[in-house]
Amino acid sequence: MPLSPDEVERYARHIVLREIGGPGQQKLKAARVLLVGAGGLGSPLALYLAAAGVGTIGVVDDDMVSLSNLQRQVLHATGAVGRPKIDSAAEALARINPHVVFEGHPQRLTAENAMELVAAYDVIADGSDNFATRYLVADACALAGRPLVTASLGTFDATLTTIRAHERQPDGTPNPTWRCLFPEPPPPGTVPSCAEAGVLGALAGMIGSMMAIEVVREIVGFGQGLVGRLLVVDARDMRFETLTYEWDPENPVTGRAPTIRDLSVHARRAPAPVG
Image 1: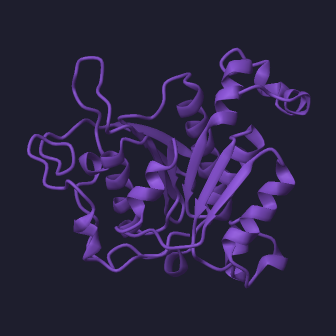
Image 2 (image 1 turned 90 degrees about the vertical axis):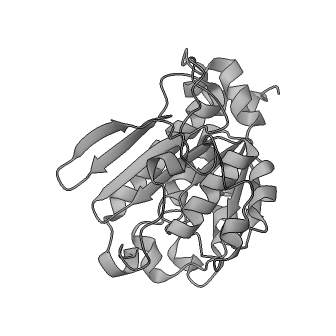
């Protein structure tokens, strides 16, 4: 997909990078990326993917912008309070890069629509803030054969990993799934929400930007990504640690005897917001 003269100038700092160059920038232009959530993580992620020249950015989120969002959700401005996040996101990305096609999905991600949404994109990036959505997205990506970049935020801590559960390692071993890392979500009420516990606003910007790097690497193909590695960030003491994890043959999605073959296991649960 050729670049216009305006795009060549716009992406000049990418094009001179040996790891990206013209061919890599053309891959970015041709790519379709779905963001689950336009909140704390989805905001910086969307901004940097648009600036990077990802050709089509889809966002699924049914939430409205509230004043308490603005401490960390930098995609939205004060004037957007009370408006759908999808509308605010569309306007913000258009200001950054008119070459990007925005596809808004103002709905909750459910067992009924997840497979169709996921299958329509090349890479999925999950910035949701609840366990129900996180497991739903991960299972859908594994079943649909889509790479997933997923992150989560705590008060001063965060994690980030990339999952390519549909592929195998060089020795033939399957890549791990989300359920290899975390087999089951914690019991309801055991992990406080952002509204209950708080969150360091700039941490969302840091992790969302790192998600954007992972997405770009997934599209272009350079460096060592985070497949099979969980990056753990402690912003209180500014510590970074990387933990490795492997395929669990007992996992219910891609294990030796899988029990999750579709998303019906999620259909019995109430849909959760994603932003």
